[in-house]
Length: 207
Image (cartoon, rainbow, N blue to C red):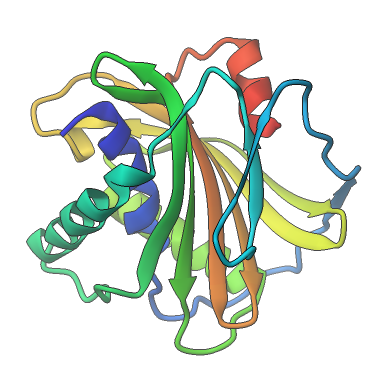
């Protein structure tokens, strides 16, 4: 399994729904201006026009990897003997900068069908619980509650040991994760990169 799959598994496996967590104090959302597309970025729209995303022109669209990712994810979940559901999650987008063993940085979009409507905070807390349970070396750099346009979202900037998903591997990966909830659908948009990423890469992830 390459680093690209490790980064994707980290996202797809941790957003799986677990029992609703009790909500703490309501978050205070920081209002951000509506994002603008950096010059030269490539626009992708899915076939049903459910979402649109822009990514750097030197990155490569890698939708052909998604079926293998889904199979690997299900195998990973079953190997953990957890009570997490299999089949409720679908990664619908993947693009990244081609490197020798995959794509890094890379960005992906994952959707989850929820059994009932949840608040954003409940969903974020459930995701955080899974991150701590599944990811060795898990370390948070920052959490933030953001209002982007009219969309409430919660952002997590964290890193974890690569060996979590690639046995015997050394080093870490860093993930910028944005979580949103729309009715009974949970959305995550994540960007995976090296932990020592330069400011330019972090700015690309934010874009």
